[in-house]
Length: 401
Image (tube, rainbow, N blue to C red; front, side):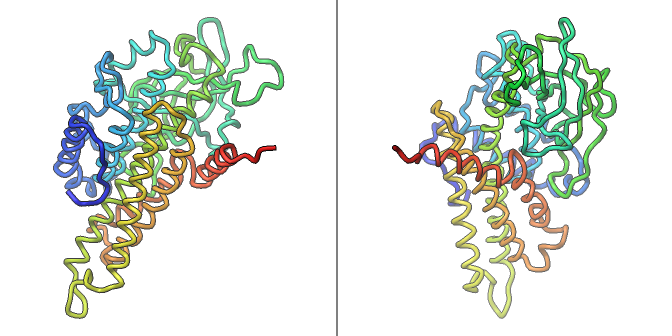
């Protein structure tokens, strides 16, 4: 294990979990990741292995069959998994966000029903905010949920669902207008629905269609889909928390921990890029010596390592703040922004160190080069993070008088 991205103050249990996950990544993920990624193949065996390790229940409380671990433990596991193959961390992340939202906001019946199955990995989660006509402007969503007796009828089109096909539970954000006066703020008329479905593509239940996988530049293997609702009926007891109008807050709480996760992914990918770069620089020779001995390459390695270390420290700080029960939107925004930007830069430097071979599909860095850009967009763009951070700083440093 390298010197970079170490975390002080971990318990014996945390160290044991991380060591197990790292061993799994080195043995089961890294050797097959590039081949599966080039085929855009879902990593079924890897996912089964993670189920057996209990990763799907990592943060689910022990009373529901999970491991009851902290956000920090989870984020450090994600960092290790993304170091192996970022797509696998995506399969876990959306599942984890839905489990977290259930744990924090679900009714007792919803927790009792879903969380044990989610901890075992038998129910797989996905969550859905975005729509084709909007990206970062969540308050402009147009998907609707209309109450009819003991049910809601959902209509609309959602976009960018990670695990859209393989999941069996989707947390879907829709607009619900019943009981709200005219002029209600848009974010106060949104509700999260817990939609159960069969895994697969096509019409997976009456009124619900998952058209198929979106073909992407990178982040392959994991299925990213649309979701089309046309008269989809959902029982009223599947409103998250049992109360309409709370969906925006519930989703934002989920996204906040999701941002720590994306930061962790950036840290993991950057760490792998550094490992590949520093290794190749010692093997490749020019002008009679390994390129690692040329000052130009040493400068690159120094910059890359500093970025890996800085991103890791910020990510760990954001996770610890949330674990302590404090608001962490400032720290999560900073960590997500820095880790994703630094990840892109470290990957590009490793790519440059590889020279012409970096462009060859035979070398792992080619895959990382296509994966890193997703982190600049996922869970809120860099611009959105800067907006959140800027607003929070002005709250903290407001002039008095």
